[in-house]
Image (tube, rainbow, N blue to C red):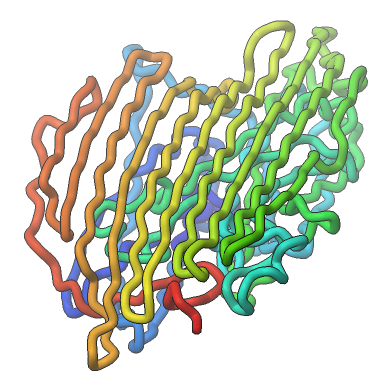
Length: 488
């Protein structure tokens, strides 16, 4: 895990895993224009890179990191980018330590907002780690006892990230399932990582309906948590304090009224239960178990916001989200398959003008099988998102699909070796300014076979890729903390 902070978190990434005895080099570029208010004043920059040293897994490398920033001056042809008037971090606020928070339990902070705030938008980072890294493989509590001990974790596969204002739900996110570079069968992600592993997706909530409450000059409680679809809504703890459960970070972007006078108004409609609806069912027989978990969320909030200058804004913030997860345990638990769908729409309008729009679909299919010496896994997952995050960023549409598979074989001497692997990745991007980018990359056994780029943002030249890498020194990392598909 790598995190870069300037008070609040601006980049959450992870490191590719090198093959045994070989060095790797990679470069990542991230546009941080939307964080300009942070760079415009003195502050502390923290690069937090935790390195796991585990010789038994072949993880013995050291990192040499160079972090640089490039600033572009505005001119008549390139005017300054739109930014918020201020960014307020909601974190542990440590001046010299990583500014993320870990749940459970929930994280709460009292924050005072400027009285002339007229708009507020929240950006959330959320990822599962430790026992929650493979949250989508967790079994519903009702049927957890029907599975072999140590096979997976309880508390179900559904996760909802919540943001509350003074105990009142303000918005939620259904997180995208990110496969980090060592996930399940590491050869599947070499040399092409999964989408989001090097730049974690973020989620956006329009908090403007709560501005009449937040702008009264008093401190208000902001709470972050992650809940399941189980009756008690609990999730798993992390392995220890170093492996974080559901890392979350929120930034508030706010726009202020130039009069400096207090913003007033009120919430006129509030339809949002503290938890969504969820259900679980199962089919059990002939040594097979199929478990299905479904969940949904509906939220509708309206408010009238009156600025100190006398401008009235009618704000509507809505969310309609759906989730389903089916897990198949077959062939005496030597086969474990998963089909998951997370989709929905979040949107807000201010006097009829769209401020936030997030139409997403995150389908994923995983087929996991094996025996005492071999683990095989295939992945089919997509990131489909039409997003207008807030008024300070242009809207864009991303359509990403990745097909990956790999195997790990235990040799007679006990060492693990990577078997055949393949990874086919198709990506497209278009934004409201007319920028486009497409890329198709295919790899087999760590060798790039095809790399095609297109669109207005495509590089003028293609990178040259290396040859076959060492395939020894792998270790499977499976749901439930297993290192083999077969546990008996």
